[in-house]
Image (cartoon, rainbow, N blue to C red; front, side, top):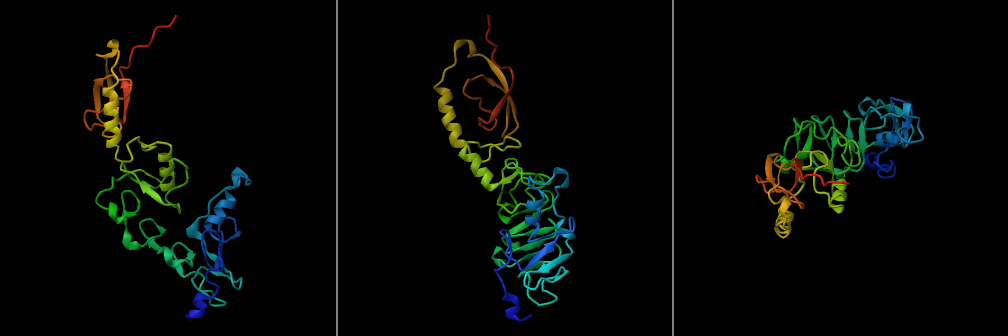
Length: 268
């Protein structure tokens, strides 16, 4: 293929999601869109009747339209009429085109979709059912189908999200920007299982000092309660304190009282 045909119109066509030189015909509604995200945004908008809302079955796309000559044709990388390259990156399995190859796209057979940031930087975990950074290969906590659910904060489906995703120490997943938003609001536990999402040892030391400097009234000094540690899962019988309860197993204060609280105050 001549280099001028490869580069003709490159970067000049596409949408806010992808630079590409073709449009797709949605097999579900037979309408033309720049990409699957454009389709999904339109067909799931509030203006659409709830019964008519739907997502495009991306792997079932069979027809594309060249943006330069408007020729509708079967899915292929080069236009059958004018010969232009409709996407420098092309995946026949996903029916996916993109002129911005700086993303280092690659197709993952395990995920069944295309990913970005370079195949050499990721591995597919078959138990979690998704691709993770190679830095997590021997250290991540496996959670079956970890990304096949909605983000617990914004509720966007994580598996096909184009946003950065963070894998928490517990193995649950969340959008990186949602995790940052949680920290702005001083939320440091997983929204799914309540396990700490970062090293909290410095906070626990400060709580040690606060507990030590806050003596309990005499009526509560021998009061014992049962707690469950959200970090290690240990159940313990500890002395009641109004500030917090420390897990004797891992020294975490990320605990919840399960039973044995202070007696209710009498009312008249």
